[in-house]
Length: 128
Length: 128
Image 1 (cartoon, each protein chain N blue to C red):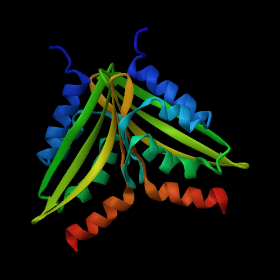
Image 2: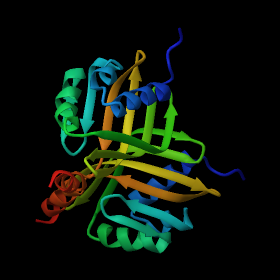
Image 3: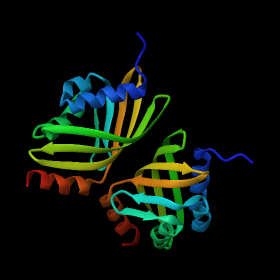
Image 4: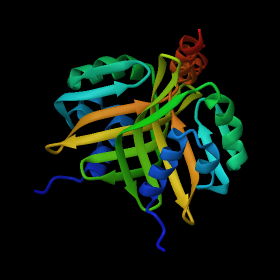
């Protein structure tokens, strides 16, 4: 079976995040994946992703990563998105630019650029 | 003469910014260019770019946009960069993800994602 393209791999990864299936999503990353939320810092490995996203997604009932523009060349996928998180009736909507790199058929880099203040202020609104 | 590729056009644009030649850079954008600093907001047209970047670059002696990763497909160029600004002996270094779109041989969209707090804190350090 041929490997999925980096774009297809990232699409599958997003689908599993949206299904709130963090274990399934992390099955698509390398053992030493770099997960970098630029204003926060880097984590490494599937456990690093789970340590960051697990607590964050805990109270979230619905996640949508809306990809607005995306380009893929070789092992790289870059996109601009609006990441949406719902708790109860409220949505947090965060503009994000993402960089993904694929090594050996798995995601080895996931870096997201966003504005931390926009995130924090909306997070307060989500649960305030 | 054939038009430059979007990647070459963006390269020429960066060169002019680094030469602190804002008029020259703005000769490469469309009349209705959208210039979006995500945490700040949008400006439009060459005058919109100059109104934002002119005052900002005024006290800056040296600018370097270091492109770390870049992909280009069709009219789109996306990259991750470190944008560096020097005043005196001090540098401000800002991680940025950029989205560029080209229409009719000119830049019609320039959107930068970054963390506003990182920018503000370093700006204070630059002139403090």
